[in-house]
Length: 324
Image (cartoon, rainbow, N blue to C red):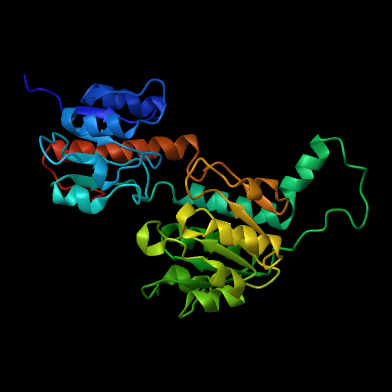
């Protein structure tokens, strides 16, 4: 009888996925769901054939041992992989996979939720009502910003960017402008009348709502900095469901304080789970705890994608979602 590959799951995954992992592999689960420390992660490379990390695990070069590595694959739970030092994995011949596609719609739903909530002051309104401070309807109470017919600017027109644009255009009759590093010209984009502009600055100048859908990591770190926040319209809103490090949070706090932009809706943060107290104290910011993919259907689908990648790897087949 051949030995099943030894795999370790760094956090709790949906029960349906953990059951499949338990059946197919010699699996070690994280019953307490506390994030693993660097020492534990380093040890995992020596003791397991596969590590199943999530976006909450930091895997810098320092965590990869230089010798006696047993791990052959990192099957990441999530699309983004900027938390993994890809070069370090590649140098040691370790495959890396991710889970694209399955979380597109749910992430775009959260993006639209943030956009509507911050524009119509839904967070503020609910807080006021729950605190017993609502004095009743009046013509000037909690006036927000109209969404229908406005212009949305998408930075990063990939799967999730397109899904956000669809919701904005077909649901709220919004004009769509976007920036993408490569040319995007397909039937879906044309059907929305979406216009690709040649620079991020052009999109920022045109948009009433700016929604970020670009990958994290070194190349896009602080893509939205003080200068770019200054290039936005004064009454505009910034929405981020991408990665926290795409936005310079200190610059964002300053722009919000000075009224350079009208508000922000954020689902991701630089250095999660820490969120700057300055953002928490602001009324014109809607803050969610990284809920982009948090639906039962999506999280199970993400887990099953990771299982499919693992299974393919150990059966010697091509990896469905290979990063390296």
